[in-house]
Length: 342
Image (cartoon, rainbow, N blue to C red):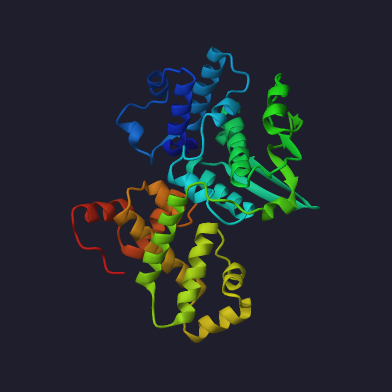
């Protein structure tokens, strides 16, 4: 029997904190989810989505909130998700930030996918999930609302929505219209928003300059460790790292980052008996080792940072790179052992 799709505590703990600001007894709510003080600190843990959806529906009924997801979104400012907020909404363009957000949701909401589609000068960003992975109205509203709030804040409030749609019904359309700044349609085929495609090129400003400096320092350490006498390969690694953080390591993006054509990049790599896939693996391996060895990050955060949308895929890759699991590697480092040879 397949395990029910779940939600990571990376998402749930900030939601619980926001519920606390509304006067909800968070200890009781956590017990409804099957969590206690010990398990609530395991940010790599998942809770069945249907259980979370039912608990939030009950809270909404008790509080008399007709749009609890929107209220929770307002109560969760930038920083609520810790390093994830920094990683998703720091630098690049809105298009790149949406791609990073898509990876974030795939990693922490099992079965849920955030899709970006362009057509006829318009772009739609929508949540998709198989029926078994849908987690209820409150969480759906929260996910859409949070993405809109973060995008507006990151672009200096320049994001103007053309349409907002939800699968569910509502008798409180005015609350939604006011929140999103446009007429919201219900009982539609998907949950999401649409806007002019030109807005994808808006630059995303850094919400936390200190966090941005940490990211830059981490990149410098990693690239220094991988540096060779071949300046071209060093440049490819730097371009790959930028691609990993933008969630796009395709040949075309890496070549564009180097200012060369794809054929030139392929030819130069072949001449050195290297491949782009090999260099992507090197960068991801070194970055994951750094994060596990030097920083207090959860395994979910590490998987996200190195570009994986599923924890199990990260576990398999790390075992292939190092011969051990991420948890075992971290335990070895914390016992004071030497860093494994790279």
